[in-house]
Image 1: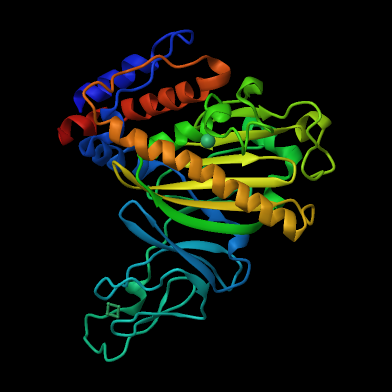
Image 2: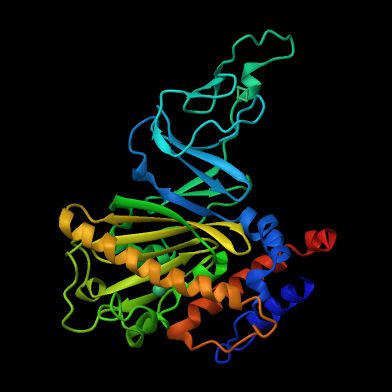
Length: 376
Ligand code: FES
Ligand SMILES: [Fe+2]
């Protein structure tokens, strides 16, 4: 693993005109995955979904982030909280799936918690040592950005994003924050989490892997690298002349902005595509070196798209995801080969985003050096 960490530093330092991808073990080693779990994943900000998935007080959904089961819930004060989905009595999960509750009642011994995580009732707990106030559900570090909900398992993680950030400026005319969610879905893929980040963020494969679904709208040849910065990268998938923008979107958009999809990654685990009327975001939940849970949401701008068009878009994205998944699951097996060594990457417009990700991972990894030695 020391070798992989060294290789990461070496490849990230290569000149921009001769980029190289990481060897297969970076994506298949369970030891590497455990290291990432303890460092870059534990400290990172992870998108859990859209704020308008839970519009009313008591609306909640659950999610597993690394080893932490979480409840994302809107409180009576309209605030969204991310609570540990672990009973303070003996550790039972309190909720499953999604829904709306007045109280969370544990299915084991019926301890009852409010929507803010406070313990409200615990039957027959008359021990002198019992203090209900000390049994509040843990609240995790939470941030809302552009209508997305993020969580970091590191209580000290600094918030990200500001209006002067180039990614915020790129998204501002689309009014990303105001998009409303129309579809969510989850499934497990047998791939490494970094492979899906890289796959979604490079335009090089579009015309090859998606000849029927995407090539007509976003051919590889029109892909252009866009803004990058601390913790993110992006590229523009431009539409050919004559392709009508699907819905007008926000009034402030230029015709150029209507003629492309901006694909961005917020590292480590969110990838998304912003078009005039459609916003698709994928949250990647790493489960093992070769297994992820994928949650994707589709959102639209106001009433821009009718129900039939939305259904057609859902179908299209299901097909696109199926095409990508088939490739990534086959590649995951081949990446175990001794011959899955570093390979040359394509230029800035096609795979420059992969290089950005590599450089970010290398910077993060270098910051964990003292703990690294202790762990080895
Ligand atoms: S584990 Fe929840 S009440 Fe006992
Ligand atoms: Fe793809």
